[in-house]
Image (cartoon, rainbow, N blue to C red; front, top):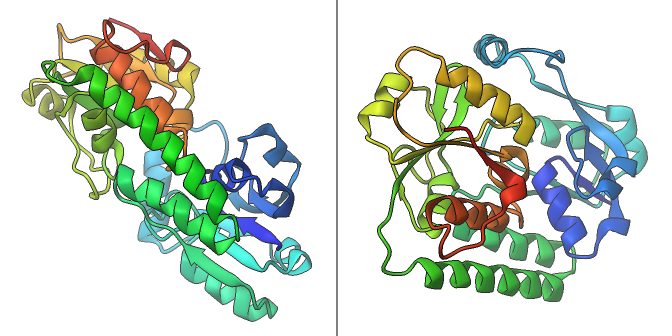
Length: 295
C-alpha cells in the first residue's frame, strides 16, 4: 500500500503501527520519527518563516478571511506517488491542507486512492483514531496492541492521582494573543489529575485575554504554544509573563507542545504523564524533558 500522510500525527501513527515502509509522502512538518524526514514532501505551509506569534496570528486571520490557502499541495509529487490511501483531517484549517482541496486534487490528478479523514475531539477519540487508521491500512492487530499499552499507562496515572486534590490548570495554546487550549487538551488535564480552568473538549481553541485567564483563578498555568517545542515555549512563556494582565503569583510552566500536546497521536499519553508530574510530583514521576518551570 502507498500511503500519504498530510498530518504529523498520522505520520507518527503509521510508523508506530509498523507501516513506515508503506508511507510514501508526508508534509514538511512531519518530523517524528526521524525516518519520516526521508519521505517525499507533498504539502508545505505558505506562511513565511521567522514570524512572531502575533504576526502568525495576523497572517492566519487575513488569509482565512480572504479564502487563501495556508498549505500548498505538490501536485507533481502527489501524481507520481499515486497513493492508495491519504490520511488527513477536517478539524482545523490552520493545521493541514483543506480536505476538500485534497479531494479536488485527487480527482484532477486521476488518483483513485481512498481519503481517510480523522477528526478526534477527545483523548478517547484520539485512541479510537489509531484503531481506525490501523484497520484502514491493514495493521489492526498492531493498532489494538498500541492502544492497549497506551490505556494501561493512562490507567496507571489515574490510579496514582486517585483521591488527590485536583488543581485548576490553565493550558494556553497561543500567547499573542492568548488562546485557550481546546479539542482534546482539556482531557489531558483531566486525565493527569487536574481540573481544566480554561478550554472545552471538542471546542476549537478560542482567543482570550490574560485578564480573562486570571479571572478563572488557576492554580497553575501551562504555556503550550502550538507548533513550538520546549525551548520556543519557554521563550514565549517568558514574554507572556511580562504582558499586561498576566496572572501574578501563579506557578507557570512551559511544555513541549509540539511533541506531547497538540499532535493527536500516541505521544499525548506522554503529555498526560508530564502534566501529572507538574500537579502531582509526589505521585507521578512525570516527563521532565518535556516541561520546565518558570515561576
